[in-house]
Image (cartoon, rainbow, N blue to C red; front, side):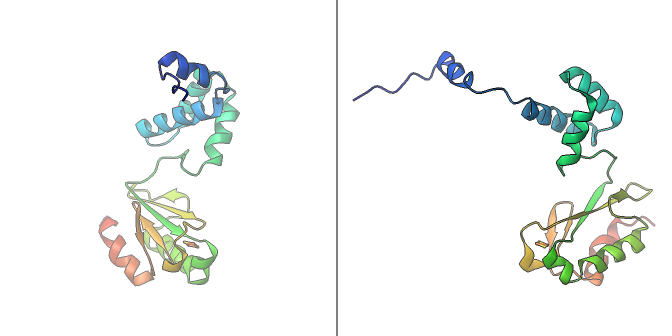
Length: 159
Ligand code: FES
């Protein structure tokens, strides 16, 4: 029987050293931390991060615009995300988007002037049977209608 290899730091590092460090992974982690601190990634923040990491700023923009989780603009206190994937679309998702846009005077991808609500859309979150689906601050609301939506969103509307 052969003894298991020792798991001391040197051994672990030796194995890790076989793999190239992923610059992109480090970059993503840095961007996550910056966004967690500032709420979004302002150009000034990205410029500073690019200098720190030593990559062109355009590379950071590519990463930020590739991943849906990064935001280049400030977001509202509440986030309303309407699924506009095929299953939700055929069940009236676009009517829900129109309804919210009218009620809150905000277009998809933007935030109300009072910074209360950001309206976003997504293409399928894998809960198609519940469509049309709307997520409000991360909570899923299925089989959504304009009237149900009004009840949920009404408290978020400032008088
Ligand atoms: S299309 Fe909306 S959850 Fe799949």
